[in-house]
Each structure stands twice: as structure tokens, then as C-alpha cells.
Length: 246
Image (cartoon, helix red, strand yellow):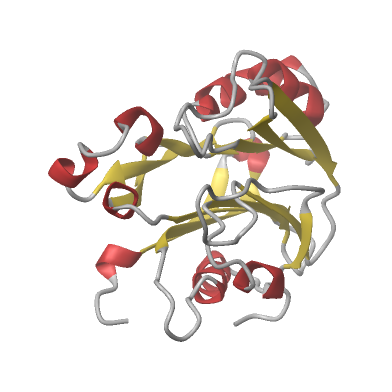
């Protein structure tokens, strides 16, 4: 496991994960999205590139039908005059809001104003989102359920520093029911790698289960920006279902 991802490896079941930061050279912005899942429908997914998007898609339509397709199939990352990332269909609203402000926190506030936590009782999965603007500014957001059923909205501006990143996840990391939501500030992580494939592999390895535990890994994608203004990106995807025997 790459040094710096210890906080991720300590999470037995983090759900979905977003990491935003900058590579060790300080020249490239980094966005990582990872999926872990416990149910058969959550496991029956993969990520794939289509045009300027990384989509979460089914590996098995019949198994997927047992879950909520609206919550399981969505554009995880969109690339157009910046980067938008989320664990749901709100990604589309984020990318269309990028031009409305040069403040990434304001972009997320505008884009997510009509969104709440996911309607998957009794878990009520938080919606996690993030963006990087062409001005190389970034922010993360989490929307989760309060005890009275209302939505708690937190937005965090993320400083982009060489070799540094910030991470949020949908769940705290404890494998129990109902699974507790992520709490507190985004977590510091070190980004030691210079290439998208190496960083994706480091995250995938960090999510490996401890001995005797279930392997909840589903997919990891890492995006390194070449030139956001020119929509140049390096992308690497790892899908568990394509790695049988590993």
C-alpha cells in the first residue's frame, strides 16, 4: 500500500470515496473516485469511459434490477471546462454550474441546492460531490440526513498542494447496520504517485480487505489533469470484475 493512504485502508466499508488533490510534481490536479459495495446489485457494476465522462454501469442487468437503478447507474466524473465528480446523477448539475462562479464552493452550493441525501432507507446514503475549476480551485461537499429527516449540507474548499489530497466517503468505514455516515472534515491523504495508473493501483490496494474479511471493492478511477483549459486528461480505471483471481 502506498504511504499516505493508511486512513483509507483502515475503513472496512467506506462506501463511495472521492479524493481531490494535486500530484507530487505539483503540475497536475488529481481526482479519484472509488466504489465499494456489499449487496449483489452494488457489486454488479463497473466504470467505463464514454466521451468526456466516466460512467458507473452494470456488469449484470438482472442482478442490477434487484437494486435501485437510479442510484446505481450514473456519471461519476464529467470533464468539460473543469472536473465534476459525485456518487450520483448530481454530477450533471455540477458540470453545468462550473461557469457560474470562480468560487468552487459556490459552484457546489448552486448545483446541489435541489439535491438531498439518497432515498435508500434505512441507510440514507449521503451524497458526496466535488469539483475542480479551470482556475485550479477545488471544493468537496457532503449532504447527509439529520435525525429529524432534514438535510445537513457541508461544503469544504480544498487547497491544491503538491503531493496532497483531501478525502471524503459516504460512510464512516465501520461494517455494521445501519452503516454510519461519514463525519467531520475531509481527511488528509498523501498523493505520492506521478501517474494515474499508479495512483489508481495504490487506492485499489489500500481498499483490500484484512484477512478473513469480505472484499467490498468494486471499482476505482483516477484522473490526472494534463491541461484543464484544453480538456487534456490522463485516466485509468480498475474494475474488480475484470480482475478475477487477483
